[in-house]
Length: 123
Length: 105
Image (cartoon, rainbow over the protein chains, first blue to last red):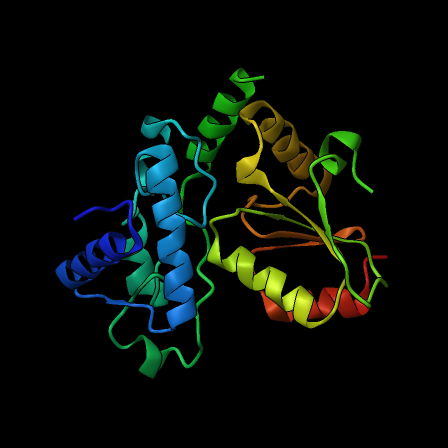
């Protein structure tokens, strides 16, 4: 499975969803954009960092954002969707009643602060 | 109008509605940011955007610092939508509609 291709990344995401009892977003355009974002990050960063969050580019600082991110499980349980809305709870479309869910950021502020410090060091 | 270190990275998208000064801070990979750009385009709103992920780390730091200090948001997330002197964090069409209707003054 080559995760630097859209087909490979989609297969990866399908496997993640299946393993966790989730489904993928059913909106074709949204799914395609999310997959494209993951492929872009995989190629440019070397890992599939969450496409909806700003990665530092330093793997150790982004480890919690590598898809599926550390926050996906709780977000899917609580909001029906992960932060990106790539992974959804199987009953999402029946119970949420919206095309998408706005999921608040669960990532600890300290981790964002560490990224900011890292950027500062690059000045 | 933002400081020069931000303005130099902005890209302008033309639109018939230029009632407000709208700038969005986005990620080029982010689906929500793409939805936000489409929302503004569909409403023919003139806006500027910056893909923050495409900027050098040192410059990113200055921009993030500016957003934090100027708007004092709980979090900086994307898209970060600024309309005049108001802002909305994340893609939320209802909040954006409200902000664009009421304006930022």
